[in-house]
Image (cartoon, rainbow, N blue to C red):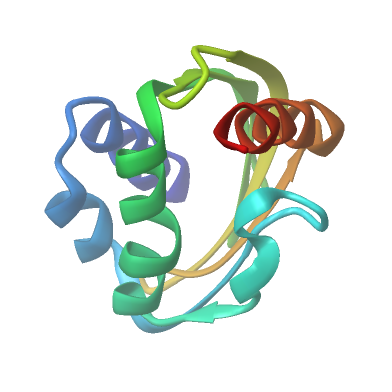
Length: 136
């Protein structure tokens, strides 16, 4: 079942196993961060390497203890929706992100072919602005 694939993906992400996460992605995956989210500057990310560089490596270098906390999964055949929260601390400032998040995953033949993030972009921008003003 596709929902089981996505649950395993979150478990791999939680233990820091980027290789296992990327292995679930189709080579032509299309990944979109929420509009106005700090990492939306690369939308759409196409392919696992672009996602690893443009999203995952930035999360790893800019945040401490970045967690996706799934609360509920909705399974609709080839689409899985995760409702949850982000929790992390911005490394530069110590500002905390605690934001609602929705992830929409598209799958085909056991591989993730698409991703769309929806989250509290205003909160993320506030955290980033605190960082920019502190750095100046």
